[in-house]
Length: 94
Image 1 (cartoon, rainbow, N blue to C red):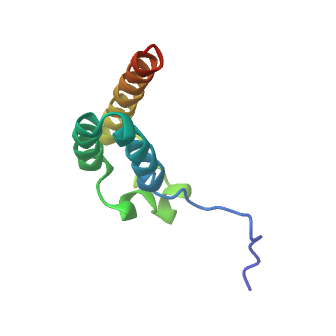
Image 2 (image 1 turned 60 degrees about the horizontal axis):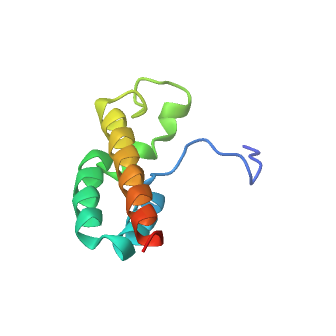
């Protein structure tokens, strides 16, 4: 019998939901820019199953965490936030 605490996690979910939430927010300020970043980020997210692989908890080989996609996703996220902060500053100065 396996006893697993209800709060125990053996894998992390895909970041798709939170990134799309942020993109939806950014679209309120800059819809064209948000769509550009959505396409870029989605291309690096791939399938949710890639992120939700419980085997990666015990063996790093199947983990997506060291792939080039993660580096590109980080870069894309940073660019997206930088653009948001610049646009937000420009809007607040009006």
